[in-house]
Figure (cartoon, protein in one colour):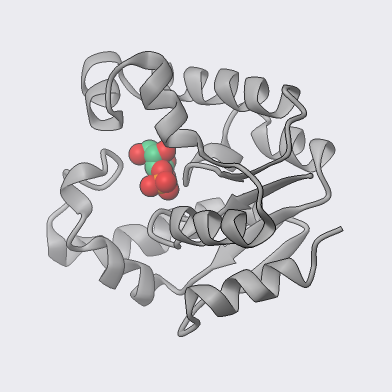
Length: 171
Ligand code: S3P
């Protein structure tokens, strides 16, 4: 069984993915961690030294590699993964268990404001501009995320509640 979590940065993909993997006794893989390991640099360094296009190529290549392995796993995608290189089609054609972790713009902003400096997509923004940026960016990305088999509203829910909601929909 391959289970994939997608959603905007800060939507809880890694935390929820880890808890879900423990509950289901499946291996957990964070695509960003895998990219960092394989490239030998952290994500901000990759963006800084090689640029976003290089990152998106690697993201696609490693996503394909992980899915092709056919190993059972819970996979947390990166926030941009579904939006490039036909990755969402690849995900949807590989497994019936793709979940979008849905959160509102204000909730995402509140989570990301303290972490913005480690995230290359938003590190250049002034804190007061973050909410407007996330609003526009999510508007562009939502059509990709919404193609997931299930959208899980995560606002105000505990990790355990979100895990239970996902577990109840697995096929
Ligand atoms: C990105 C999200 C990040 C990471 C990279 C680009 C994006 O993943 O892949 O910084 O384009 O939204 P997380 O959503 O896991 O932070």
